[in-house]
Each structure stands twice: as structure tokens, then as C-alpha cells.
Amino acid sequence: MQQTQYLVVTAIGTDRTGIVSDLTRLVNDCSCNILDSRMAIFGKEFTFIMLLSGDRVAISKVENTLPSTSHELGLLTMMKRTTRHVDHTDDLTFGIEYVGPDIPGTLNTVTEFLTEQGVGIASLKADAFHDEDNDMSKHATCLTIRLSQSTDVEQFTSKLNSLCDELNQQVTIHQII
Image 1 (cartoon, rainbow, N blue to C red):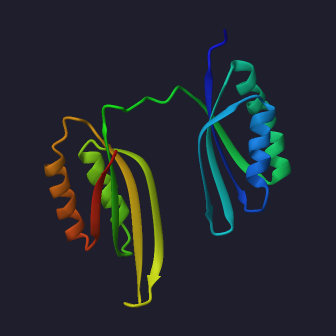
Image 2: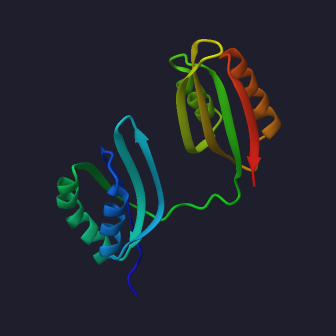
């Protein structure tokens, strides 16, 4: 029995109808499975990231086929071999959402705080928008984080609330079960 191997694939290019289908067809044709994926549109650009699994032959086929297919599709791609994802079943998962004035450095300050607290970020989505009521640029950020069982959640929440107050951000924190 062959050992399962893993490959992370990232693709970026001009958005068009059918591009996800083209990429998933390539993965399927190479006999790989998509274990996880994320897709987003930034401006007119499409970006897609996938975690693939397959045996050695299937992963090698993706690595050999993707460059020419990417060129045909007008995509920039990167690939990196990886290992099986570590299951964090003992961790506590929380959602953090904060909204406020769009001030450069806010996201960096929050992520540095999380790093200092030893908190892992599982996902992050940040959007800037114009608040018509107040005629100002604002942003909304949503993070999914993992806290170890030993984390004092009340103390962590208090510190995060204080930081967001200093940054003039409205924050909500909720546990994800």
C-alpha cells in the first residue's frame, strides 16, 4: 500500500467563468483528492489554494502537469509538498470579529498581539469599505483562532478587548463549537 502524500497548490490569475472547474478537473484527472480549499476574488484577480492528497504517482502527476496547464490558463501557480494536517482537537476554537476605522497597522497590531499570546490563527478575512453614514473608510476583520486548553480565556478576552479599545475597534469574540 502506498503512503499518502500531500501537496499545497496556489493559483492566481484573471478571474473568468470556469477557472475553478479547470483546476479541479486537473486534480481529478491526476487521481488526487482536494482535502481543503479556499477561493477569493481580489479586484479582477482570482486566487485559489488547495491542499491535495494522493499517492506518490498522483502527486507527481500534478507537479508535472500543472505548469503547462497553468500557462494555458494564464495562471501563476506555486506548489509545495507538505505533511498531513495536525489535528487540534484539544484546542478551543474562537471567532474574533472587529470593525472600526481603516487605519494602517491595525491588522498588524492585532496579529502581533495574538503571536505574543501564543495564539494560532486558523483563518483570516479582512475587508475595507466606505461607511456612508459617517463618510469614512472602515474595515471589518474576521479571524478564527485556536487557544490551548491551558489558556485563561477570560484573561485573553480582557486583553484583546483592551487592545481593540485602544485601536478604536468594536470587537466580538465567540467560541466555535
